[in-house]
Image (cartoon, rainbow, N blue to C red; front, side):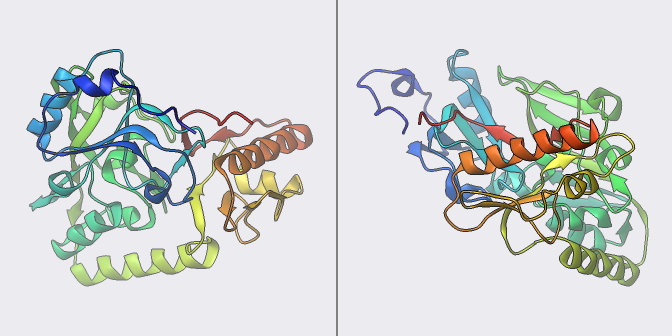
Length: 307
């Protein structure tokens, strides 16, 4: 459990903002796994100027972590030191123009795909199969169904840790498989994505196909964090996990999905430690049976709770 707030600490010196700041804020409700300890402080800025004010006035020693809707996130049971920033509201706005769409970092990927469909912009349908927000999609070069962010990103805006605005072009991202090279401390604000002319009906049909495929193959209605491990070069993570005998493996209330074994599930009362330890056991067995080391795709933040 995170320490009780002291009479005088860094939280007493936070800058005045228009957004909402909560102390010792539970994080589990903000993650799809529904597990994890509290954040020392949770800040939901009103807009970009509010976020700039906050960052410029925040002590540089205070850790900052940015989250979206928690779809690809595991918050450890000991909680998250420093400030967690969650982008909602104005950060979820979307605009379309010609064959491009500009979306706030807090916009849901599915909502962006639907906006593109309504505007007759093809090429962004894959986002309807990516759980999460545009900010998270940029951070991990998210992809599915034959496309990824590097294929559609034109530019983006971000704030560095000092609150300075940075304008990024595609070449600045250093996109590789499920990774981007932008400084981890930078906070994405918005991205401009480019598609191509398309017919709304055909785009909608493709999105329907993606939805059906996803629901057939993945445990979409479970408490999960999405794809757990990145596919190693030349391999499919799920096949390696299956070959290692991990399908259905449990630890506490955490389970390797029997439907798609690259997904970990919270069966009801799992802790973050159950989920992470299960993932590490999967990695150990896969390395032992295949010689391949799996890399976590799920972002793990915070500290482990002392046992």
